[in-house]
Length: 108
Length: 108
Image (cartoon, rainbow over all chains, first blue to last red; front, side, top):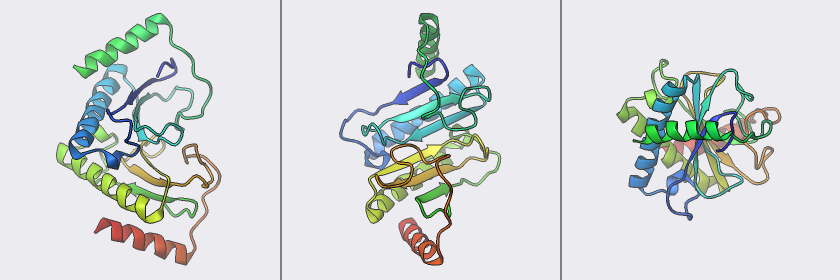
């Protein structure tokens, strides 16, 4: 998500027909969660975040997507969930580059 | 959770030292997610819910726990996440028995 308040990833499995985690074939389910686990571990360490929030909600946007959000005790919504709190603030070009680099490195 | 507004489960892996999903050993991680997947599928069908929300947040309570929540379009918080919306309403004895039976059957 392009929001400078959080490092916030959306993992979206291929297949617009999936709306629930349990609908994913076993292999895709395991793959998605393996990625979430790995990204969570690496990005928490890299960003020195206090907590990771991982969630599959999808009440607004039904296509299956998994939120992976780095949380800090000084972030805007802490200790509450991030959804619906305040207003998204777009990243600067530099912030976007930093976030993209972090995520790309974590994916390798 | 004892809240008549939602069928809301907390899956808590053994081990008070775990605070993040990625800290779980692979086997426990797979086991937890397998349970979440199975409960999600069975309970969504049994309760004719529109959506399942699954989340590992843990900002308030650090010991690792996974929320599995059946959502309906007529529930109090819809389409927003349930956390921090309104006030918990304890189930009656009958509601508690029904919920317990549903969950026990889904676990078998």
